[in-house]
Amino acid sequence: MVLLVLFAILLGFVGIGVPILLAIGLVGAGGMYFIDGINFALFPQRIFAMLDSFSLLALPYFVLAGALMAKGGLAQALVNFGMACVGHYRGSLAHTAIVSCTAMANVSGSSTAEAAAIGGIIIPAMKDKGYQPGLAAAIVGSAATIGPIIPPSMTMIVYGAMTGVSIGGLFIGGILPGLLLAVMMMVMVRLLAFLPNYPELNHREPKASFSQLLKAAREAWVALLAPVIILGGIFSGVFTATEAGVVASLYSFLVSVLVYKELKLKDMPRVILEAAVTTATVVGIISMAGALGWLLAYLNFNQLVLATLSTLSDNATVILIALLATVIVLTMFLESLAVLIVFVPIAAYVAQNFGFDQIHVGVLMVIATQIGATTPPVAVLMFVTTSIAGARFIDTCKHAVPFIGTLLGFLLVLVLIPSIVMFLPNLLM
Image (tube, rainbow, N blue to C red; front, side, top):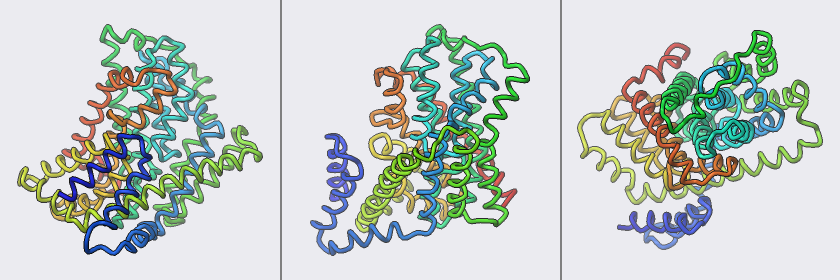
């Protein structure tokens, strides 16, 4: 009963527009204050305990790296590269958006940042070519989910810091799934082009000449080289995953200032401030969700969820699917990072007791939270792209249905074929 009251209050706060960080903090603090047997001094203790992780030090550096690249001309170079590669196919701008988001994932680590950076460039171009605003927003919002799957990923850093799972392993485990998702989305675009409701998807640009393709690659190669440096350094033992964030920030600064020359030294205070605000928001959610997660564990929430899942089936795969479905449903209403933090202990338990690899489950959990971020009523990614497109939110949601279906099918494929996630970690680790 107490758990139901806590979740009802949390959803009520979110429903009336209370910021998610404040809503989670109020519920956690209120629960610890009013529930008998809990010393309220535990609230600040659990907040600091949640943040007492060396691995989390990577977060601000990767956030800064993404901000530097986004402001330093990277997004435009990647869009140009995507257009040169796939612009001659039917649905050229839709394919370009997907390829650009896939390439941007190499440095952003955040789906929201990716939706804003790529969407701000490609959505106006899509509208100029006759794309329905809601369709343009739906395509970019869905493609932005690739951001936290392909390394580096802030969500994977949080998951690894909480569970002790190798962050480098999670990073490399997301590479093939991220590429597979991009291919599946491009296939969906091609299928939609056959429907009479999407005449704009039959548009194609002239095929880029070899010199144009070479020019686009020359502009984008420094950005595409970033994951090679980051992952290569981690797996060669040159630096840790945390230290990789520092390397990524330095590399992003040098590329933005010296190569693209879009970022000036006078712009640095503004970029650093934006990165600091983003970091503070993410860390705030992590800390408050950690306190709430402890309270839920004290109230046996984890055992209750596990007992409920176990009653569904004796099949481990069915239990894993049910867990992922629960995460998706909750992230439809709550901030995805907060849901991930609360469910990390349950995910780790399911992996340990049902024979799943921890890296496999970690990648699946990251993907599940991103699916929720594209699904109404909250659908953070769709809100970002809808505002850029000037569309009605209901129109974006209508056009997003086939892409959400693609995401769900993609997640199911990864559940049933773990080798897609585990091939590279098994090969390289």
